[in-house]
Length: 298
Image (tube, rainbow, N blue to C red; front, side, top):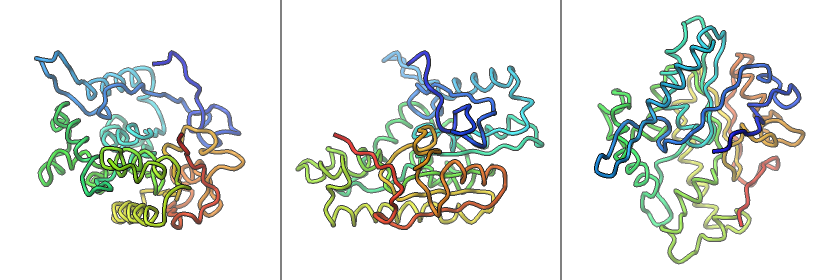
């Protein structure tokens, strides 16, 4: 809960670090509710209250009162849990502004997949189910989803992105390192430790393990297939072992930042936001991309 953090990448106010958004008003919402600003429930016996949705609304009200209501253009972005929040609240954010305002959303590393782990179990689904149940998230879900699917499924982006009306850009690595570690091959699904080294460093994965991870990439591409048809939406799926690429300067915009077809993430997002050109960038499978900034853990 630092009092001050450096604004880098998409939040930078320097043109050489953030060429298309440096002179915007930039706000970072501190995330502390544990359900991507979507919870609204309480457990009186345990004296626990979950008020993510109310925190979100209070923040929006304050920003609108400070001048956001007169913005000509707005972009809701976030990474990881914030990337999921950008999806969950995208249309709601759009509704805060007049129709004349250009409003879009960007999800960075928020494409959490409802995928099987290495033991065939559903680690992430069980985790999300706990969050949704504990925090009463169902009350804040769109009816178009809950009419057709259970509440846990409606917390997974793959079941939401097809119904979002506001233009949305999905930026994600095809081998998201958080999902590899916490969803696909967590220690709970790997009691023998077969995945231990691979989980921390992709260079130590066996051929069979890489094959499993290629299957995860295929699931990711299937999940965004219908979404990618809309000319309003944007995509940048690079074949890296990383997590969150918009707020880190080295991955957002630098001399050696990750590219697909020679285009850096900052330029891809800007081309899409300003309607300069359509952006539907999907990388070839690992290990073909030499521009990645892979994350290696000890």
